[in-house]
Structures are given as C-alpha cells and as structure tokens.
Image (cartoon, rainbow, N blue to C red):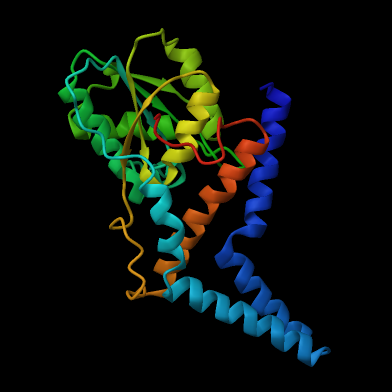
Length: 272
C-alpha cells in the first residue's frame, strides 16, 4: 500500500462516512423533507416520514444490537493457555486528543477499556513487548496524537511509559497493522496479542492478517450482552443511534477493506 493510495482511501472513507452515518443521514432526510414539502407536499411528506421513522426504529429498536452482536461474538474472549506471549499491540481509538489538549489532562472515550487491558497485560506478562498504535483518525490532525494521550495516562495506571513502544503515525486500522508490523518486525513462532474493542476486532484481525502480522485476538470494550434481546428496546434514542452508527460503520468498513485488499476476508474470524 503506497502513501498516495493510502491517503486517498483515508480521505474518501472519512467523507463518505460523514454522508452515510445513519443518525446524520436520517436527520438530514427528515429536514430536507420538511423543506421539500413547501413545494412538493407529497414527496416531502414521505421523506420526512421515512427519516423520522428511521430515527425511531434505529434509536429505540434493536437494530444496533442486531448489527453489533455478530461482530462482538466473532472472536472469543482470550483465555491464557500457558503459551508464552511475545508482545501486545493495543490499538488507539479510546482517546480524546482534542479535549486532552484543551483541558491539560487525559480524556478517554467509552473505549478506554483498551487502556485498562494495556495496564493489566503489562503486569501479567512482564517480559512481553508492549506496543500502542494510534495517531489520529481526524481529517485535521489535533495538537496531540492518540499516542500522546496514552503517554499521559500510563503513569496514572501504574505503567512506566518507557515500557511501551509507540506508533503515532497511523490514521486508520489498515495503517495500524502495517506500521505496527514495521515497528516490531515479528518473526515466525512469536505470539502477539491484539487489543481492541470487540466490535472492531473482525476488521482489525483481517487488517493484521493482510499486513502479514499474525496476532491473537484480545477483545475488550463489549457493548452488548452477546444476544440481540429482541424484546428489549433502548431506553434512549441517542443510545440506540450510537450503537447503530458504530456497528454499521464496522460492516461498511469490512466491505470497503475487503474490496481494497486491506483485509484477508470479508468477515474475518478465528482460524479453524
């Protein structure tokens, strides 16, 4: 993957997702329907109806969980079988560099469990190499990278930042994989753990396989109980929409990554 194609893919993916994200697209559709209704009453009415119903269905219904559960269940929770662990790669995505820069203290998102796993694994495997991979996925790079935020967090978790090797140039999962491989130069027979959110694990595992970096999944940050729970609606529209947005982003990402050769399979799973 050359720099030009990687950059083009990064910007195209960001711009297309801004238009496709369900919560925004449905809201925009409803708003355009109201405006169109001033001149084209029937067409505008249908647009508004579809937009509002879509928001309610995705926000209160089980759409988000139905999309998320297969992703989260794809790789099992890691169980230590006694085999040596060469190293651990933790992917960024649980940090808020913009807020951290503004407030002067580290800010994390709900994916902050990745940092908890980093601290735990660094203590459980004192001889293992620890790598954090994360630059910035924003169109405009913030004053701090995700790696900069993690450097601030680690002392609060009792981890010496000198223990961790940082990869701070990546902008997406494919670059996480390629740049992490270039940093650690894994050799055959080594066993590396990959820490990221369970929702994101299929795309991450596929990206690392495509980059020639074999890893073992260590999923964290679960957002579902493992079943769709069809009869249990979300309590808040915003909660359901957030899960729908996050899960659909992964499904679209899997298709896009497969079409561009950034994963080794359409729906990567555990080796048989």
